[in-house]
Length: 434
Image 1 (cartoon, rainbow, N blue to C red):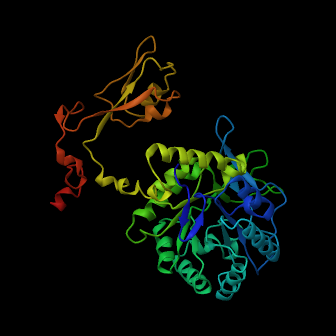
Image 2: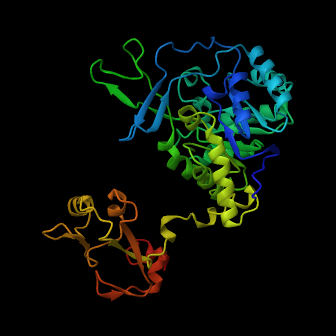
Image 3: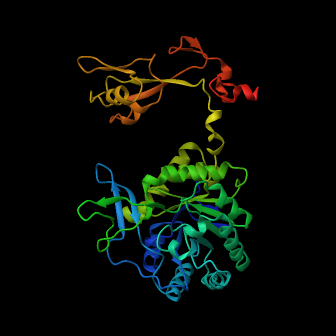
């Protein structure tokens, strides 16, 4: 069987699935249950000291976005870092690490952006026996108003400064948790790397308002008639997270920096996708909050079975395998041509493909009087919108037309050199390049 053992920046765990710093990791009871269920590691909910006391709201803390079947797609939270006493947290962490020595236990930390706070708390936490630290530079609400969280994560110079303080205070691995609420993820990642960070983790939650109560005219969740922006997570943010992970993995300035992937991991397949794009492990939060800690059994079994099927012996063999296939648009092969094909046997004649193509795309689908749908190749530009709106999986597929075949839209054979955007006649810079 495949070996799921993970060694992430020197931190060993029996599998690459960790619980992210969040409500599920706020106390000993939860973390013990997580480890007993089979999770490879846990990032303890963010610890902090000094400044105003941490007091959470006593009204609703979560807002949600659901699919048509009431399946949770996105979760917005306005909860702060741990509001439990630091000493209690440290005592519990020490006991958990003592009883589960083979599991990864990471301390998430957030304190004011002053050197003495960081250099005091890091050695104190290290006494518990934790395996490493995650610097929370991502929280977008509550703490950012106090000059912490994303207020630090949005300024690369601050990231570099605080990371250096922490690296000077411990020999344990230091992971920098990045905020997605920024225009270019490379800047903060590069700052962390310059400061000697052992790894980065991303993404933290995205600043969001998920809905408005149209009776009270206040954002949800509503606290005594008022609402605020919170942090958005769950399956809906996975595409954003995957892109940012891939950006760091494939950019020369940050390549080689270990990455812990976070954002919408719900199944083993999600985890494998993060690994393929360069993450060394993954962290999970919303899925555990939705389905409970027991989902780790499916994640481990599914990943192991898939690895056996594909012939992968270890997790390390997966990490980064898809990165060479991530490229910039200008390098895509313009000779690669596909056309939509509709399977009449599985078609239920709903007409969604026709409506989508006729009204908003390229008028490439015909509908007969008895509602039989077919594709007009000369109009089809292979956008695959029809595939994505069809409710029957596999009913509409994209069929490749080999390179060099006649383009029915123009009646000409596409020249091979058109596969290179630098020489494509539609590229306004092509003549300049020549």
